[in-house]
Every structure is written in structure tokens, then in C-alpha cells.
Image (cartoon, rainbow, N blue to C red; front, side, top):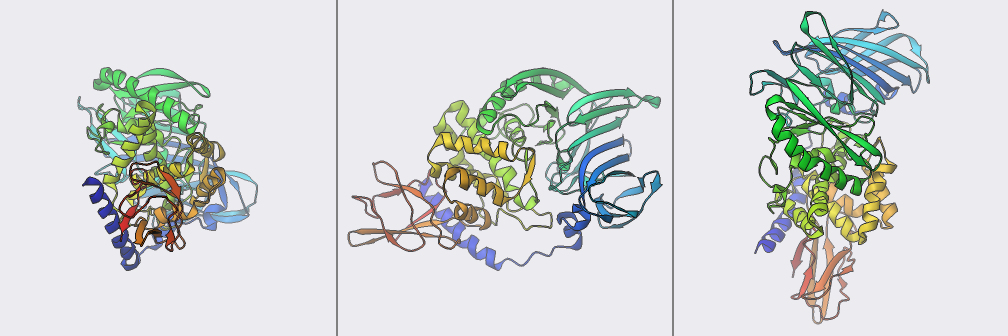
Length: 551
């Protein structure tokens, strides 16, 4: 009965989803959306090489003040460029070679004019001084902003979570995923008695007049600006190391005082098994130079590069529940596995445009199943994947609109994960599939990418043209349906899909027999399977997220 209901739901999702896509009103994007989401010449004219973010946190009035140095290489001659800072924060001045530059603002964009042309190939730098009260998040990490709260002992606890909203909600930056800074120094000054934990390695701690303390964190690897994190609280820390594929990886755990004992037990049970599993599937952890950290956070979690925010309350599952409904998700800590998985997909490999966020979320959601497989066997991993389908809505395109800072449907998580499992099934060679996953990390190491690059690589390495498969699942709300018809002694099959000439290979069998591949097209064709009738033909709907319609 459950399988029938799933298939019915899938069919409804296909037909309703396809119509909904045609009937939805055209989104009304604003000029501000384009300024944030589009790579105009005012943004591509310079390539960011280095930032030094130097910020002071005033907890009493929830404000920030400080500066950010932009060191860049000019990609063309220009006299004007754009950086980004939310309009509720004040740009006090922009300094270049000791002189203040003229600037104007529109929405959250800032346009700087240079008195003399900056020549292509030159390396220059300017510093933005700013201050103000950043947006306060009400439901971080979903709505974005800064979280101001207190720990169990009444001490301040502050953190950032700005994915989607944008890093420019709290610091001046070129706020577009396509240009990752090559390295960065993050200096955060906090009130007496508190510590800041940011990305990379702690380089220096400086006691300042008045009792405040500055923490300098150096990031040696390219980092996307939404990953740059501030975590301020009454932290204590302990450390460990992991013998990984690239040698010794340092592990640091920064937790509130009251969580120290349970953190030592809980992190030990989850982190090293996670690293062993994901290094096996995806290749070496991408940031050995910056180490790996878990940081207590006053929100559920976020994939801040080399400083993963953790707020799952030291329990297995997703806040104590299993998103797959199988029970397997209660055997490990969802936030540790999922958010750490983003170190490979999201942080190492980053989508150029947020519209392609499926590259982050589909692969990382898939990593949950791969971790389950590495711990409990392939069948368990497949069961977890199948259970993820309960979360799929088939409500829209997984790929969002380009150039306006909008992601697509939330189906990028579980539907995307099931898509990748189907591709694995089609490849039909687990060792080759593992090498494809590892090859992605190596080929696109520390790069920003597009959907076309990822799909093209999988096509090339698998020896199969899977573009239509990806297009159907990523660009349309519904799923394909395999239609089965009996004409006298002949069984006919075809795909009903949104993608023209859709021809995905699929596994079928006569009930009780062995599965084999067929490759239907968009027109009815005879099924070459001895003994098959429309009543005894079984489609592998366990490994394929498809609809089945028997006429």
C-alpha cells in the first residue's frame, strides 16, 4: 500500500507540477535583486585576492564597527567598481592610497569612483570603514543575520548565519559566490571575558585597553564570504587530530563551559567516523591547512568553512528526529554529518550563482546516505535514501532564476539526493561512481562552478549522456512516469516527461526475476523481456524516483 501511495503521489506531483510551472506568475524581481545577484562589469573588473576584516562587536547595543581591506587584481582597466554592504549599515569612508574615494549607494550596493584609472593586471587595495546595527535574525539559520542571546550562565552568546541573506548583512564585501577570496585575516574584538571563534587558525590574541580582547584568525584557503563566521561567547576548547588522506588533520572543538563533558563524548563518536567516510567517498578533506572545527552555536547549524556551527543539542538525528523515517537517521548526529559534508560540496566546490545551490545541497544530502552506507551497509544507505522521499514536494524547479540571488525549490535536498542515487544506479559500477565523486573534488578543487560543468564532468567520466536526466529532475517540478501498455502479447513502454525525447535507462524485471536495464524513449516501443506482461512487470521504484502508470 505504501508503495502504491508513493507512486500515486509521484504521478500527482508530475501532472500538477508541470501545469503549475506554466501557470505560475512571473516573479517580480527588483533592481536590488539584480544588483546583488548579477556579475556586472563593475564587479568582474576586479578579482579579490585578500581581505582583512577588522571588526569590533558591541553587544550592549547590538552594533558593529570596523573596517575591511580589499586587496585585488584588476581584470581590466576601470575607474569604478561595486562592493556590497546592507543599507542599514553606514559606510563612513573608503580609503585608497591615503585618500578618501568618492562613493554612492543604491540599495545594498556601494559604487566607488577612482580619480585615475586602475590598470588591468595591477594589484591594488582599498579599505572600507563602516559601522551600524546589523540585521538581527529571528529564526537563524533560516532567516539570516546575527543572533544575540545568552548561555545557560547568563553570559552573552553571539553568532552569524547569513547564507542566502548575504555576508554584506554584516561586513563590506563583494557579495557574490562567483568570486572567492584567496585568503583572509579575520580580526574580531569582543568584550572582556568573551572569546571569538572564526574560520581558519587562531594566529594571535591581544588584550586591549579597557578590557576587550582581539582575536586574529588566519584563513589560508579560498573562502566564500557567506562562510565567514563570528562566534562570540564564554567558550572553552579541546583538541584532537585525525590521520587522514593528506596527513594529520587538526580537530578543534569550541564549546560553552556547560557543554564540555558531553561534547567530548558526543564529538568523539561522530567526527572521526564522518571524516573517514566522507574522505573515502569524496576525497581528502579540502582544508587541511585551516584545520577542522566544531563550534557551539545558538542556532541549529551552518557549514562555516573550517568552523562548522553546531546547535543540535548533543543528540543524534535532526533535533532528535529522523528525517528519513527509517530509524537510521537516529544512529548519528545529523548536523555534524550534513554540515561537515558541505566542506566538500558548498565550501570546496561552490556554485557560481545561488540558483545552482543544488550542487551544495543535493550532494551534501546524499552524503548522509553515503555515511549511513559506510556505517551499516549499502542496503541501509539505500533505505535511508528511499526514506528521504517523504520530504519531497515536487513544487518547483530545483534550479533557481539566475542573476537575482534566488535559489530554487527546497527539493534540492532530498529530491536532489535521490537523483544522484539514480545516476549511481545507471552507472551500475560502484567503484566508478566513487571515483566520479572523488574526481569532482579533485577537478574542481577550490573552484566555483556551474550546473553545466558538474553534469558535463559526470557525463564524461561515466561514459553516458545524462543531461536529459539532470534536466528533468533539476529544471521541472514533476518526475517522469514510465507508462506501460499491453497490446495482445506485446508489452509497450514509454517515458512521459517534460524534457523532449527523454530516454533515461531504468531497471525492470518480471516479478521474482533479476533486474535488467531498458532504455525507453518518449514514444511507445516494444519491451524485449521474455515472459513480461503489464501485470507482472516490476519497475525498480526503490532505486528510481519515478512514477509508473499501467494502462
